[in-house]
Image (cartoon, rainbow, N blue to C red; front, side, top):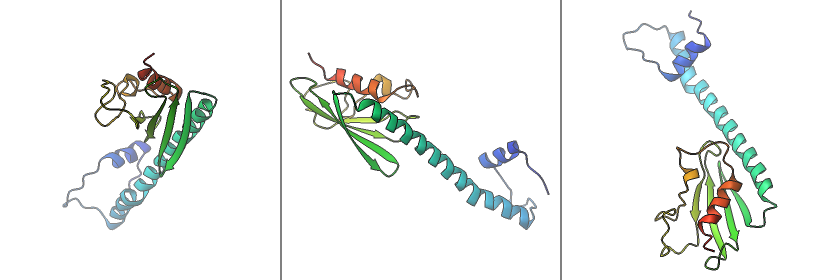
Length: 165
């Protein structure tokens, strides 16, 4: 019987190639099958749970920080593992006195949220809004996204995008 170190187990998790003519006894085959069919899924689920826990803790803190801000009215929706914020930007300008945006948090804070404008007139051309009304700010791009970015900064940048005064 072979005892594997943690490094060996990590290697098995990432890659294993067994040729048909390689002689493995039944016990070893069962152990390998158990690892890939059972244990690997356990690790995936644990990682998914911890990632979601981080996301929910972070979003709850940021929502609490934003609750005193009079420029934003935020409603939250928990959609399975995705969290969605419906945000109303209050008194942005004369054209859009109450601008609605939808923010979707998939793997936040590891990945930037996706932000859509909901009641935006597409005849007003803006290079920071694509044809699907998705807001494209430099802070939201994968190359510039950082864990230190927060929703207060992002919402302030979104508000400046529509501040025509």
